[in-house]
Length: 340
Ligand SMILES: NC(=O)C1=CN([C@@H]2O[C@H](COP(=O)(O)OP(=O)(O)OC[C@H]3O[C@@H](n4cnc5c(N)ncnc54)[C@H](OP(=O)(O)O)[C@@H]3O)[C@@H](O)[C@H]2O)C=CC1
Ligand SMILES: O=C(OP(=O)(O)O)[C@H](O)COP(=O)(O)O
Image 1: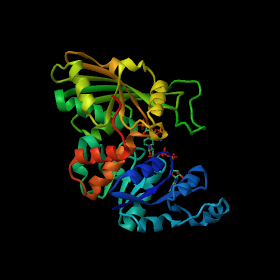
Image 2: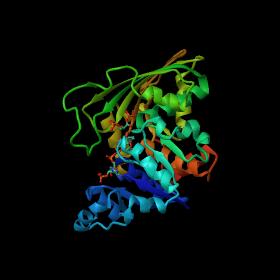
Image 3: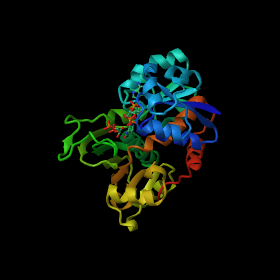
Image 4: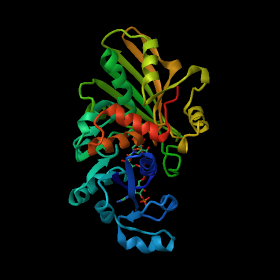
């Protein structure tokens, strides 16, 4: 069994912890928080040993009735690999802790590529992660872009990608984030970080990305255009998506034309936390005019990187060396097959 620690039991960390628990080859040795707030009670309910970054805060946890198993250092001593899901920027500061403990570490997309020197996407570069000590799973939007670009590039070759990310303002529980009434250019400069981040995984891809933030919490929406190296067809793109384990097809017949309806659909499917782990490509949007491909895809920011993180754990531990095998095991263990 691979012993996994989660440093930062928040939006991403709690999902990764639950996904690890579903896998037959890994187990959670502990999760961490700094404050005895809501997710600390969830850790207790799940029977995950809870560790804290600063032991001087133990009394606050004691008062809240939440048992503390020890410090983050103690948690690291008990694991083979740590998933750092602390807020962006904090993870880089934690690297010294992981080096000292001699454990492998995975960071999330809020950190820069340099934190690990290697950026990961299951369907693009799983094999390059095998045996590594450090990796960064790219951000949710970058993950969604990498999946669809890799799929199309493998079939037709991609000459150039242009993509606009219409990003959610904050996660549903992030009551202090916005905007409330604005469309924010984020960033106003071009490209957004997503293009260079895609190139940290797929260096040969030419891509320009732009990004905006809008007052919504459910999902991001991408407007993607690719110049193909040879003419394609809409039918073939749909066929490829239908066979892909991490890209779903939002069928035209469902009548779904928004993130809100898609979230409702996923909730009705009974997915935990209504998580859409796959890209949601809108069938009705897929348009191919010779070498010009356009589509819309929805990306559930809280979910898509979770399954990638599970694959990244296996690759780094070297227990499964065939990417498709890990992807299939992760999906199967979660009881997940993409929407079709
Ligand atoms: N949310 C999203 O949509 C996505 C986020 N990401 C990336 O994932 C990472 C985590 O983001 P997210 O889950 O949203 O963040 P959250 O703020 O939801 O959770 C962060 C967690 O880290 C804990 N924490 C804070 N400081 C420390 C510390 N020094 N040591 C240990 N734990 C600490 C917090 O605990 P406490 O509350 O007790 O302080 C909290 O549980 C970031 O890099 C982000 O960019 C990637 C894809 C999507
Ligand atoms: O990884 C994400 O977005 P990104 O791919 O746009 O960086 C997550 O939605 C977190 O974004 P945030 O930095 O707005 O919380």
